[in-house]
Length: 138
Figure 1 (cartoon, helix red, strand yellow):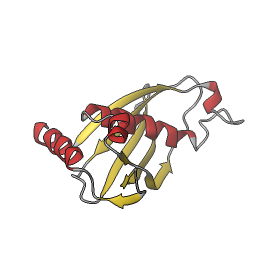
Figure 2: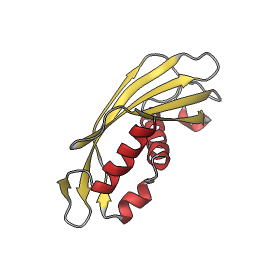
Figure 3: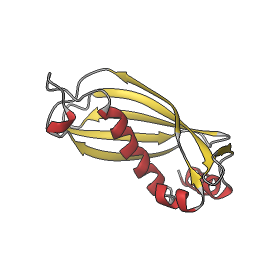
């Protein structure tokens, strides 16, 4: 398993009228965690694009257990638990840093797309090499 943690302080703009984190903001928090995970394995998203690939979200799921609130510090734990075959499955846990309560659990599924022709492809060899390298470290 490869994992990383990202700290996010809830901004006022992230909350709704009930003073809770608006549900769609959690997907943005997932995105920040995912970007940090890709950077951790040595392939930040801009590098993947330079290689000629996109990594679009093809599925997203979030289970909202408790609300995050303005100015709370959250930890986004982002995990790659399996070596990708065709699609990349990334899991997330968003935790309130102070109480250590799990607020949101979820996952996203990504496919690789050849940027030139817009067609789905298997994960590029370099991506698999970097993932395998990190799986062997852990």
